[in-house]
Image (cartoon, rainbow, N blue to C red):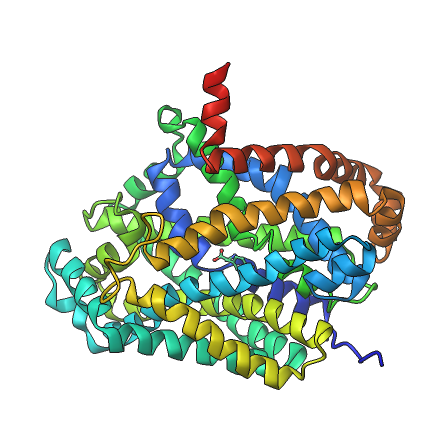
Length: 460
Ligand code: PFF
């Protein structure tokens, strides 16, 4: 018996939910520090090119696969191809959903925990970066703190997904995304108003091509994937709740625009404040948890801004996490006929359990390594460096070369009739990029991530 599928209640509902998936720790935690470390504006320009030539085309493709089949990633491939191979590719996405959520939940848990630290005014006990770093190490060494906040984060994620597509995901996105935007803009205005802010802007916006290497380009490309939630079927799953009324290229463009602009605003908010308070901008991954607490203590209104900042980070992480869990849930609901409620409870708890070793990598299990990596780094490496690019590569190959391009275009045209008639160049652009640029470039990234590109280049 065919079950009735839930759909988004409105076009804006889909755009907010999908932007919520895209905008996450990748934008607010990762983007500013990798841009800062890799030549500022030079990195940003390369990153924008990657978004335009790979991110946007693959996003359109993923959403299209979902909308056409009205299925989760495994079901989508199964519906369009009889080959078992493609079902396996779909299941890699479901597995990646689990793995990403387990380590993502740990960092998101820190962010939750830091909201309470900010409220307690703990940051005012620090006067230099060492004391802030020590405090971070102390907190993350505490098993109850780190596992407790992981549990809280996964619990809230489960609560939203449990309520369903419209009443849970769409409603939560409609509340949280505008809030996120308002907080971020407030933080940016505060950052820009500080004396010395222009040094931060220059650091972020003046291209420094000297720092750019081949590695930078690969980093930008990999980040384009992660930040747009591509390669694991999250956007496919969200696309499967779309109807044929809405234009996919137009929606995808809006999502990419929002994701990019938010990363840039986050970068401006963070670096203006870091420079204005005389802190070191090259804090790397620790920038937010080590450097920012000090920054807040040195600005007027820092108490309120510190609470707002960690609230913002937590909201961003939450709207991404719900999309990760939804991939797993959609699979069990569509393919295994599970009830949503049972699937959410079962797999929410399993995700939490998978996340525990990642959380313990910062304390009792820090000496346990596999291939030289602790659980947290292994989960991150496996998902971001292997599963997402492999997923993205095969998704673009499937769309461009397996599905049948005539059929692809018929589906894409639904909801976009005007675009096809008035601006056919948009469609031609998409065709070229999804057929050639995306698969070739992703393949190169993959080779390089596995260390094979260097070996091949050295060979010549
Ligand atoms: N796009 C999210 C971020 O930038 O933080 C991370 C992410 C979410 C990746 C969902 C993949 C995914 F399916």
